[in-house]
Length: 181
Image (cartoon, rainbow, N blue to C red; front, side, top):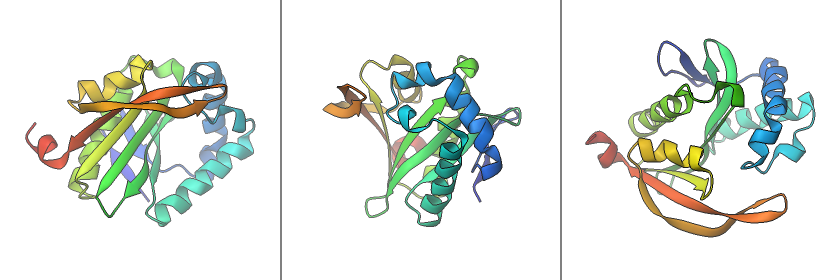
């Protein structure tokens, strides 16, 4: 099971089904906030959906397709961070994240992403890490920009969000670039 200490305040760890109620709680109370940029909120309407998500996360981890973990701030689940997908042939990991709106502005996501990048390059031996965010999602885009990722371009109409398409900015970091920081 994945557990990774970020610092004295934050631990990244795989959730278990006992976290389903809390995961649903933070999803539900941040629903309007998250719905602006995340496409899955309409499919998460009860605790059982969060439980199923956690079960799928374990299967994805067992199959080495993804690494999905909770962000625990002072031992309380406050968000999710993941390698949404691994391309093992090319040693690429694709990072995604979201945070309960009540915990914004504390540097939790930036510190968590930094730690997940360290883990990706040092432990998983990835060569490249990608982060994609909607062009208009300034908060999400600020994370790879703060961490020194290179902006590679824009994927036009890359994601369907309920009733419209959004373009995504693609950011990348290579292992040797991270080592040189």
